[in-house]
Length: 634
Image (cartoon, rainbow, N blue to C red; front, side, top):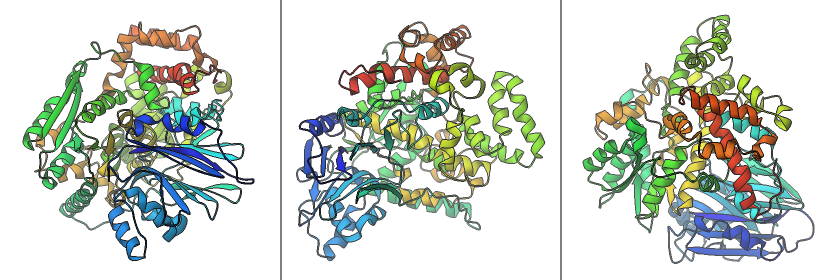
C-alpha cells in the first residue's frame, strides 16, 4: 500500500510544474501511507511522488516504474492481484521486467493496451501514469473505490493525491468550502463523491480514469457498478456453491504477500467466514485480530471472535477498550479521516488497525458483504417497503404524511414505507439532517440552498433499479460503502501503515452477486440469507443466527449524552466555532441541551455528531493541513 501525488501540466509549453520543495511536501504529508520507501519522477510537464509500504518484492519494488525505453512511467497506491497472469502475457509479447513487483506491470500493460489498461486489472488501486511521447497523463481509480484519489485543477495544472492533506500541502489549492457538498454531508454523514468539502477538489469516482492530453482534462468510466440481473431457475444449493467458489478464488488472490498477513475478526458472520476459508489455504495458523469496547455491553463481540479463533486454532490477538478510561482524541481522529465523517465506527477500526500492525503488514477484512447480500436494518426495511409497494399510491403516501406527527420512534419507518421513490427511501432510512431539522439548523450560504443536495448526489448514479431492495443495495454500494465505510477503512489502516484487503469487493465477486435474486438476500425478514446458508458448517450457527451488531453505532446517542458537558460542548458551544457561519449555533445548543436532558434517547446523536465532526475539521484539520494557515474556510 502506498500514497501517490503530483501534478500534470494541462496546457502550454512543457515546463517545471512545481516550485522546489512542493513535491516533497506533498509526498511526505503521506509518509504514514508508505514508511518503507520514497520515490519521485519529474520531467517537463509532470512531477509525481510516491510513498511505499513494501508488500510484494520488498527489496526490488521501488516506485515509480518505467517501461523498457523509459517513455512510460507509473506508480500506484494499492495492489494488482492478477499481476502474475498479466506479467506472463506481457512477457510472451516481448516485454521484459526487472522486478517481481505488481506495479511494474502498469507501464508495460499501458504500452500494450493504451488507456484501456485498467480494464485488465483485478485489484484495489489508485494509479498515475505518464506517457512522455504522447504528452499524456492518466489517473485511474479501482472499480469499487477501495483506494482513494483526489484531484484539483489549479491554473494550468492538474494536481492529484491519495489524500486531501497532500493536495493542501502543495499550497496551491484554495480552501473555500463547497456548500452543496456540505449540505449533502449533513444528510448522509459523509461527502458523496465526486464532491469533497472543498470547492476546488474532487474525488475521481470508482471505475473511472482521468486523462490529461492536448490541453484538455476528461474523465471516462471504464466499469459500471452492475445493475441487478437476477438469474432464475438456479437452486439455492447451487447459488451457495457459486458464492463459495468465487469467494475462495478472491481470498486466494489476496493472500499474495511477501510480508506477514492476517485477518480482522469482528465476531460477526462476514469476518468469521473469511477466517474459515483462509484457514483452508494456509499452512500456519491465521493471525487474527479483534477489538471491543466494554461500554457497549452486548455490542462487544469479543467472546464470539474468541470462539471462532478457537475453532480454527488461529494465532489470536485482541484488545478491549473503555471509552471512559481511554478518552478519544477527536482532532487526531479527524486528521486521519481526512474529511468530516459522522461515523464513530472508525474509532474501533483505527484501534483494530493499530493492534494488527504490531504483528502483520497485511490483513483481510469482511467489509462489503452487507451491501452485496442485504445485511442492514434498512435492507430489511426495503424488503418490507417492497411489499407495501403493492398498496395503492395514496395509501403509501399517506404513511409519509403521518410520519411528522407520529411518535419519534415511528417517524423513520413510516417515512421509509411512504417514500415516493428510491432516493426518498434512502434518505428516509439513512438521513441524518434533513427536512424540518435541516431548516432549523442551516444559515448563511447553506440556508440559500434548496436542500436537494442529497437527492442530486443520488441522482448522479442514474436511475435506480426496480424493486425497493434492489434499488437500496445498488445505491448503498455506490454511496455509503465508498464514501463512508471504505473511506474510513483506508484512512484508519493507512494511519498505522497497514494494508487491508477486502475479498467480498473483488469486482468479479460483485458481478456474481448482481445475478443473485433479491429474495435470496433478504428472505422473510432474515438478512443475508444466502450468505448465511453458505456459512453453515464453516461458521458456528450461533454467530450466523445472532442479530447483527453495528460496531459502536448503537452507542452514539449514549456517548453524546455522556460527553455533552465535556469535549462535545468544548467544540459545539465555543463562541468562536467556525461552523457557526453556516449552521445556527443557538439551534445546535438547543439540540444539545435536549439530547442531554433525555439521556440520549431522542435520536439526535448523529445530527450532533455530523456538526461536531464538521467543526473539528474546520477548526483543527484545515489549519494544520494548510501548514498553520488560519484563513477561514467558510
